[in-house]
Image 1 (cartoon, one colour):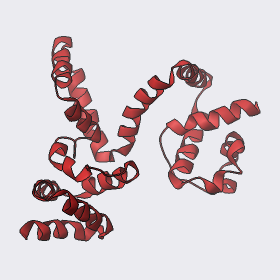
Image 2: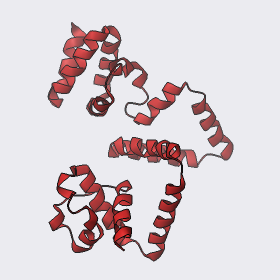
Image 3: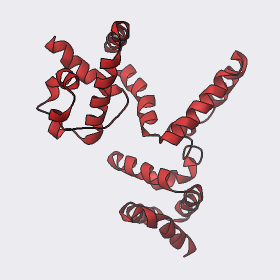
Image 4: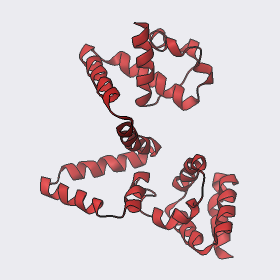
Length: 219
């Protein structure tokens, strides 16, 4: 039983987030399920605690059939080679990075695709596969910045992987016009000035970033 609870506590990391609480304040059923993580709980970051709590709630809400299905899927997952784990985690990570508004846009697009005939669906897939690899990769960034990311890509040259997430969050928070201005500015600046601009934008308060872009563009 203890081994199963430990496995479940880790498996539940893959489900949706909710409010995080101190471990001792969690409802008793959640504390029982997540007991293997009690000692580590204070050191977990807030998003991880949130996912664990929400997913414990999800597990506890399932009936026997639902829990059996989750165990079956987890067992299938464990049988996959590591390369396939990495490939499948990519879409999930991309989905987690989207805002709620972007997720709704993706759902609407998926519904529109599902309403097409099989031949039309295949034509859409074929058109996407014909795009250059970097353009296909851009669309994983979501509808807000994916379409225009080719123009923003110069800003990401030589950016350490650890800093890409914060820069993408910054881009998503800008208005479409500010992103268009930033793309124009990125194409004008030499590499060393693009790096300086990146650092200025990240350091600036969010409400001042659009004015900063406009000031640099007007120089």
